Image (cartoon, rainbow, N blue to C red; front, side, top):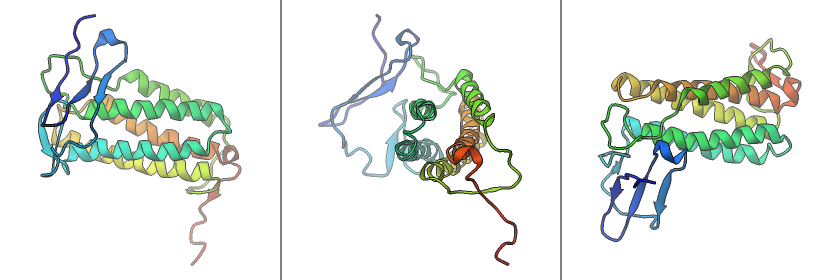
Length: 220
């Protein structure tokens, strides 16, 4: 196999190779983390996958930082989904996809590179759509909005849904700021993801039978 091109950040006392992806790797990215703190972010900047340094509060960092937050929420949700191996497997695939998403956002799409960056692709979006359709088939028909809650699994999946929506809002704002630097598939992925979490939350509430429905004006 030919050498894998990589972008490196090499401050004193540390060596980190950023995740890169070659088509020949068939999805296997190389990551080297042999020191956790580097001190390079002490002045409020961080490095993109290109090596370029930008503010930690930059909209691009907010976007993939929020996808990381979402991934952590899914880790908690999965603790409550062990009773359904099919749904848990779906969530595990999504957790892996969210790292792909972070890799996508950390390398602006308009950059000319010497390597093939890892990107979200349409087949990942299509898989989410198929899973939405699969789970939704078994759900109780819905005739009202739903209050987040019910089972622990459902509550955490509703939280995941709202954070996915926030990540999508950030991604669309980033796309508006940098139209050529954000991939359409990444934004579509976030959109379908929140829809899937909504369906999953209902599925884990006894397939919708245990949903807590909104009663308009009930406490007036």
